[in-house]
Amino acid sequence: MYDLIPLKVTQGIHASSSRTPHKVAIRHGDRSVTYKELTNRMRLVSAAGMADPNFRGTVTIVAQNSVEYIEIFLGLADIGTRVCTISSKSSSREIIALLVESNSTALFIDESLYREEYKQYTNVILTIGDQYESWLSKHKPIERYPHVSDSSIFNIICSSGTTGDP
Image (cartoon, rainbow, N blue to C red; front, side, top):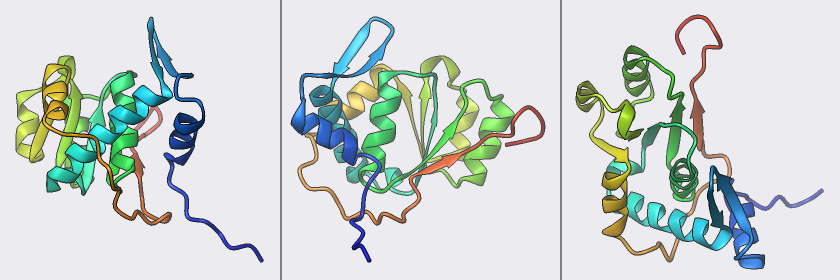
């Protein structure tokens, strides 16, 4: 029998950052981010998330692919936050239904997708852009991570395929 070592979804990223910090981790468009830059941003997200209980239950992300999407997702996973990912192509009705269904306490959303009506369905909304950067700037990178069980839920994927509600 083997003794299993608990793993978090982010351990490969952290290991790559310590081995090859200057290697490119993400390319998106003409933007490149190294492993060191990515883990530093993830640590900021983790610290900011730990500072506010609204970011420790279920947090929803509604955004197009971006570097910020990845750092939010992984930074929250590092502290044990469940992340509900919703397609940026979802309608307002679908987004609201999923905010309610997932019992989301915070929402990260692209500025272009933000609707005032979302405020009544979650405690905190941060638009990805200047508001997100301002939120991060108030924190120092996390130094000590909380224990996260390897059996903890880290992602809630909402999809209905091409028919029905997610």
